[in-house]
Image (cartoon, rainbow, N blue to C red; front, side, top):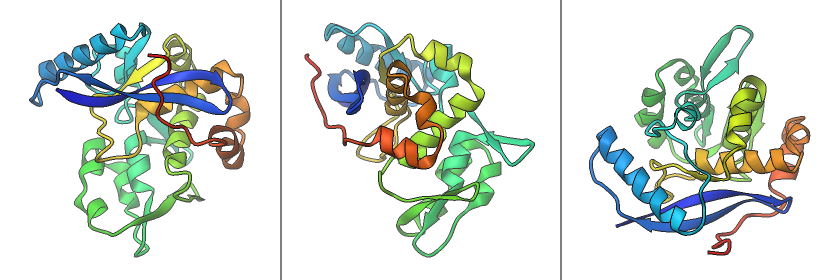
Length: 225
């Protein structure tokens, strides 16, 4: 058995996602077939709780939409005439306590950027520097959430429309014991912003995004299960 968080969109401005942990049968192994079994097992348990509009958001998703929403696949505008993957944009923007920033990671493969050993051997992350804007570590997921949502808002309006048909999101690759940012959580936030007609306002500036999205720190809830 394993335990993973799932994320749901909401209809309240004070809390843009709800999170709960679900126990399910996990299938060991790195093959796609094993990952799919684990996803199906997780979704089966979620459906027992009354959720039906569920989307796996990762490269292991068997849903084309979920696959395309992976940070490894989304393309971010960079400079005037370049695009890089969202994963590379995130990893290359990390600024460490010794002043290091490995912005050459912008232009490598997503998996290489994520697994670059320097990211784990350079001390604490003090913030993020991307396109001349510095993002502090608080709120903890602000830069990732903004980068992800801004990317969809600017380049993938058709995907946003499809995404809005779902209200529950999972990421089989996300383990909260090892990482903080989760693309499934960010998708739940995006859908909530869209449903509440706050997406346009949130995208006008860094300051507005933080004000609208993080006015209240979400807590784990069972959302009626």
